[in-house]
Amino acid sequence: MDIDEAIYGRRSTREYTPQAVADQGIRRLIDAAVHAPSASNGQPWTFTVVRDQGLLDRISRAAKSHMLATLPAGPRSDRYRTSLSDPDFQIFYHAPVLILISGRAQGPWNVEDCALAAENLMLAAYGDGLGTCWIGFAQGFLNTSEGKNALGLPATWVPVAPIIVGHPKAMPAPVARKEPEIRWIG
Ligand SMILES: Cc1cc2nc3c(=O)[nH]c(=O)nc-3n(C[C@H](O)[C@H](O)[C@H](O)COP(=O)(O)O)c2cc1C
Image (cartoon, helix red, strand yellow):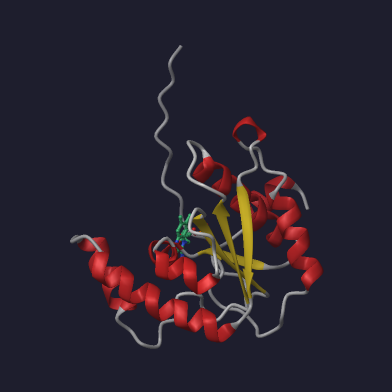
């Protein structure tokens, strides 16, 4: 796929068919992810592939409670509070796969490195006809010891990018972009 087509065509996908994603397909996305740049070529990322829907349901419930208990006050939080309080809202949108990208340890650029890997993974998925969405709602909980235990992660790992993957039910509509603020110097 042409690079512009991938960059401009990728959308966060929140509706999936029940079709599974093949192991080979998941491995290819992870291969694209590890070709991202990283500080000093440190490649601090790890990948946890979760397909157990019961576990994803349990993590969704715990993550919603965690978010509700820790949300700061403000208009955006009020909007989040409504969906997080809805018992029918599953934060992973019942996607067949969650790929969690975590840093192997705390490090000065590990979060940036994992985020770059995540973007590569999402663009590659789009190129392969798959949908993805970064699930920030999961991050707070996954960074607690309870969250790490739920996935059997070592205590030193730092969950950064929980990305759901699946076959999209339909292509989501584009989301408008703001005019970028650009300062030219020189
Ligand atoms: C760090 C981060 C966290 C996000 N968290 C969520 C989330 O928890 N739930 C969700 O539905 N979308 C989430 N998104 C997706 C954004 O809402 C989406 O990227 C944005 O609306 C722009 O739409 P697009 O990705 O289709 O261009 C997240 C995206 C990022 C980058």
